[in-house]
Length: 594
Image 1 (cartoon, rainbow, N blue to C red):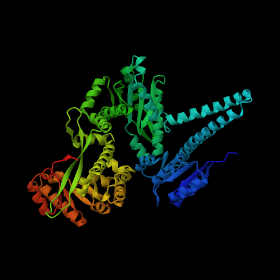
Image 2: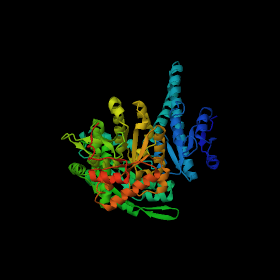
Image 3: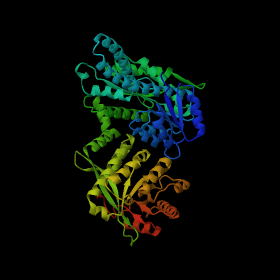
Image 4: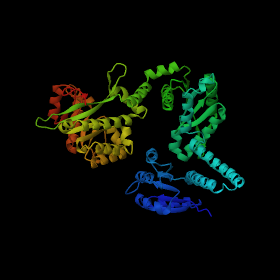
């Protein structure tokens, strides 16, 4: 007799455990509960769960850390984990920690049961396939004596195995919500066209179509994730009805974006589809809780050419065309000529995105530094700030961050630059022990996206250990605005680094007009005043007043102050009169290569 699957529910709130248990009682499952992440890890060996419902916020180790420990356990690394959370920001962090799915709070019964059954089915199929494969190998050895009987039984078992393999392949290549192909399958399809195999047998240039649903976020946030999933399902059905399955490959790219690879018909086929889709969305109405919502979409198409090198590049190109179309109010756009696309790429952010990727792959970035000088005469300490530069392959010159950082943030690759800079800075300091010994503090900027990554602080700690460097000599700078907009992430980031001796600076201070109450709760160590207030404070009374106010605030918080963009002696004199401890700028030192 087949035993019901065991589901482990982990939450430190008894009421939450009771509610989830009541919801799961309707399913044929054996329920085990744990009131902490530590208890859950203890129960793994004894209960052998087939699924784990894991709360995010708990005392002791939180849900993310619990999931990471499960994933490194050799016996339980494949057990599906569904996070239960009330915060949208936790969703991406949950997937990064190794989660398979998520359930939003307040929970909806039908959502919980649907997602649980889906993960249980997938887990069961994987295990059955493993068992059947092992069984097949054993049976082949045992039944060689009676080939007719063996062949008959094997045909039946192979058919069962083929069915499960097909089912697993379907689950691996299709989106759970829309039943369309998922991003991985889309990657495989686009890569096939980039390879040029299709170009030998077809007269048509394939097109990549991106469809962005404009109202999805409004509905998903106001009506809940169940409504959002239902909207995506209905729109996927609408798109599927308007496409030709023999010609078009439909997929859900991410969030509220759909993608289609159109292999035949060229731009004329795209134009025809766009007209049908515009009319279809115009006639479409989404109903939820006795309310009706009208939809609109931004649709763009670009040709897939042989000079494209990767799926990521194609998506980046289409996303940039979609982004610029939205900004200009254009709902439908077809790029018919690849040269037009190259021209837009050259004059837009996209070119920078591709150059950054090349820079990381070809090691074109350089680490430079600028001294931070004491404005107090008897201060012996030597401080430097690390600055990043990008080498221009065409002329050998240096490109400054102002030219490429916005594009890096736009395409979500600025964290890769942060990691490169931190790793290479520490390596060079390790390789130059005399320089390391002469420095009292090294300041490094970290971006908003990096602070939000759950493992970024741990990455810094690992690099410190790797190069055997003292964390007390490092100061990591995050912007004032970012610290307050992502208060919980910033506080955790600061706490982890403080445990290893590192200091934290609030950079660009004064631009965010922060709440004094919030500042008192953040464990930062010094304040850097934004250079826009410093560079003309000796002739601008308003900026002089701003600097004076910030310095007074810093004195109240007992935090030292660093002034950026110090460019002449008059600014130095003004800062000294206000009691600013440190100055940084071309007046003291022009940046040079580390």
